Length: 432
Image (cartoon, rainbow, N blue to C red; front, side, top):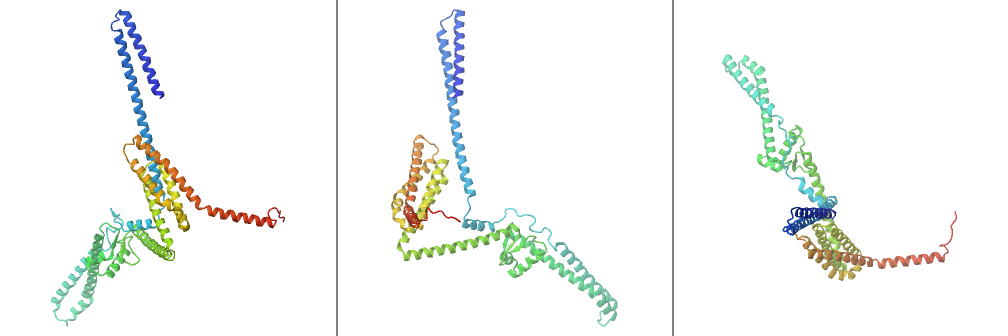
């Protein structure tokens, strides 16, 4: 407003100078015909400048209000987001997340989980090559010596050379070739296992054993040997040896999954126990069935209010809905612990709650409108004020539930004071 006044003052100062100059020119030139026209044009031009300045100021104010409203909405959304992040998850949600994450595929497998130079890749090849060379050399020497000493098995020189030289060479070479073949076979199976992982850090043992036509027991033994040789540096099995886990992260996820399953089983067991107790109570006391139905309906109402609270932007309405949700929750907690109070909330359930939900729903729809006109703003304000009235009424209803308790406590205190007075204990001073 101060800027606008300053602008107007500047404009009026300019118009005065302009009119002064026009009059002075007319006096100097003694031409008065255009005097009125020039003065009128100058005044009109100045007024246009003032009008444009006012419109510019109004536009600046409008943008400032929009920016303030946007900042408030962002602050409210940020607060809700922080509350959701900081809100502790219930055990069932932790279990569900563990189940989803424990065996999820990894987009890019770390390089240190599978050996790039598996044990036996080079040594197996060398053993096979030199072993086969040794076998070939020993057989060739046998042919040469046989041609020299004759092909009879009774030739003493041939028998001596064969037993003393050729047989050891042949035996060692055959063992080297067999060992090399064994190592090469293990490397081949290792590559098959690695390819079956397909970028994951876990795999079912059956997915590894079926393609190579081996039993699960054989594959587990084979993998255990590979793990000991560092071919899968972080490799482990689950407790039932049904899965291969090749990273510490996958193993930790497996432990979370195991814990999650325990939580789910415990939750299912507790729910079943609660259901059995509920059915037993309903059988013994039919009125408890009505109580449970009312509580279920109340929990659904609380859920709907909470969903609306999350969807609606605004700090003020959020506080009002938080207050409303809290007092409704307390009312149904009291009814659950004190079923005798059920008749007192019949009207509460039959009219007040549905009407409250309707108001919250209308507010949610109005708040979602992109253009917040005067009627929408007025209706929202009226609903906000009504929610305060409803919350206050619900709080009074909750307080009325404790009327009997207050009377009982007051009676007990009165009786206690009377008994103490009769015994003369209320005013007596006790000395050590």
